[in-house]
Image (cartoon, rainbow, N blue to C red):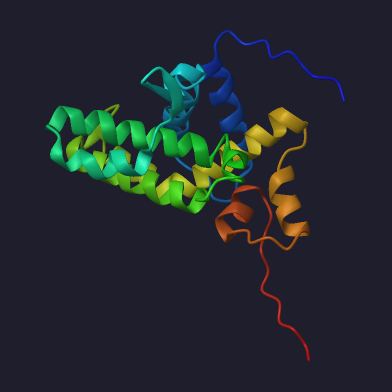
Length: 195
């Protein structure tokens, strides 16, 4: 398989177009404003320096759980920044880089819970975005569906096979949520074992 060079005027547009295309195929599409927001997050973290932090001259991953816990002690402005950072990074880890947690102690469920909590707290601090009331609450609600779209897009970008990750999970009898199946176009059916 040959690698393709992506020609796009900007990364944000590339991510928006890719996620929108997948969202249109979904049985449970999410609002376009959430797609727009997530493409902005993907564009923002395109540079690795935004993803990692430097402490004592060493580069390491940000500890999102601690940041979320400590945020309650900060001023309102600092809380906005921390909640947004934790939510956005959790979205990125659970979505576009979901395979990166395979060798970690925690899994994507942990980051998913962190992300949903961070966006819910952010919704309490900033009740609207783009003049949409309760926007971050909507992001928290759509979190799993959105990360599934991002995972499918990442798999497609890497392998050229849309939905490959979901189908591999199904073939290996790995747990796949109903939302993952619906977003990827797989219609779950109820089956009963006959004994």
